[in-house]
Image (tube, rainbow, N blue to C red; front, side, top):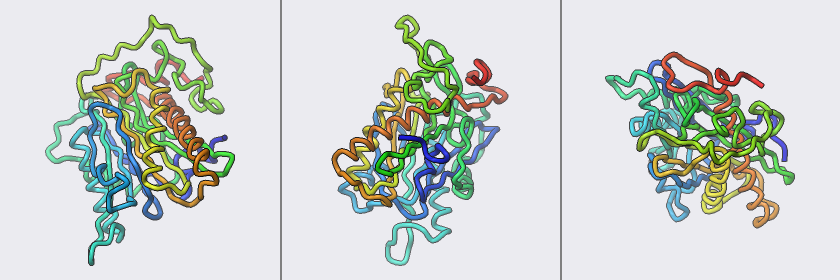
Length: 330
């Protein structure tokens, strides 16, 4: 397995990512949108999730495809970002056909970034216009680090960020991940600079520092209060999957989160993974290729998490230092 041409989730043909930020509020939104509706699933392992329209992703529901997936800052306020995306998609004539109407299907998830040093004293919720702006900016290029939903993200000891990575399997199927890293835990070992995800790094994509040795005496001691965290992610593939298979892909991808963040899936995080499948490439072997797909999704997510933290940049009022400022580029 090797990364795709961009080493981004948009290596999955037919998918684009749009992002928008508000530097004053210190927050942002990321949107995954397809050229056509796509199959999606979801799995939640954190104890404090914030979601929109995730129930309809169960395999027994009427709607089997979605128009977009949204990751947003803003805690519960950020759920409104998906409304802005839905408005934009409706204006494009997209959505589930109901009589003479179109209803865009836009599941979303949020992270908590309300205590990151930004000005949260807004008169009107900023997330709906941010969502629409992110959709309008959809492109194959994806800014990493302090961008989109990761713009105001933090971890236990460093700034978080927006990360992405991809892999192409030997059978030709492509897998990618997009993640907003806002964890109660830490992405680095013993305070850094080496990343927990180092065993899965490819080509020095987050510094090429090699693997560290875990010292139990340096176990992270997260100090975030209840609800002040959450890492939210999307894994995507061009494989032809059912909703049930997409859900299993989301379950498998959580292994990547556990490899890259310590601790992860805590009662104080809302850790969640969406899975998206465009259906362009049949699975040659429904059993073993599904297994390989899940492994690839976990590897991509671990790498994307490290890349998000690695590429974060400083801004006035930050409550955490960024990796680059503390350790410099390798």
